[in-house]
Length: 340
Image 1 (cartoon, rainbow, N blue to C red):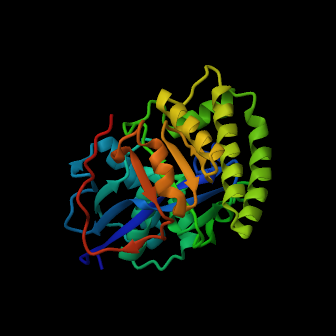
Image 2: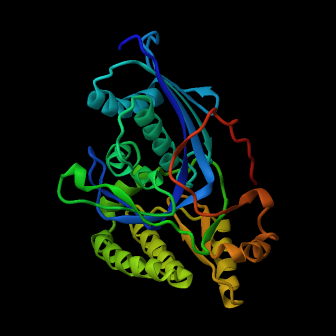
């Protein structure tokens, strides 16, 4: 068995939370303070190849064509150890990953990255884990990756206490109705404050954070009802308010921090103008300056037209709902984009 090679290549799509995940109650097991809900996106994804081989001297990790240093490789190796310990197959692994999402820019690159990696390992080692069970592994690499194991609209359950198995994700709706997302890439560079640092700082210092779990529970209940109705205006309204409550909580941390840039505010202003003009457009933002517009896919060309004077075509990414992870035959080429 030890001379056997285990390999697979998978693609996973990123997701954008409509009900936000912000804060862990257990740092080691990546157990969240609240449940969350997201839309998986077709246009943004990560391709990852894994190869477990006894002939390898040690683990290696290549991201977007660049061999990663010991620190970055160690992070990934620790994640792979979850599967090595589970399977009993303790072989070195070579990982090569290509992000079609700007890394660490608030576009959930870690979600697609760890969903693709978990899916590839699951297939390579022939573990046969269901997406729900696999999500309990993926969560320990990136919390939001749990939701990228599913297409359409997915929910990550916070679970109970320190029970790792109870914090899993599942698909809520395949999002086959008229819904899409237009991403306004304000800045594709690595954000100054990572999500992990930002979350912990908010928990420890924001006086508003104690209200956050209660507000999320209310919003989630309303969102599930809106999804059942397939009501894009209700979905958008709830998501927009939830996002701004999250950012208000972040702003109230001490010392205060924020993820907004001037062009983030301009994009929000334009969305409000679109809505005043009768379009169904609603904004959301994660831990980064980029603005995501929830809207009917059928209105996306009109919505894009409102943005063209302030943002280039390259800064506007239109997307339908995406699927769960799937096997591919070869890695794609690294993404090369530059924005203002």
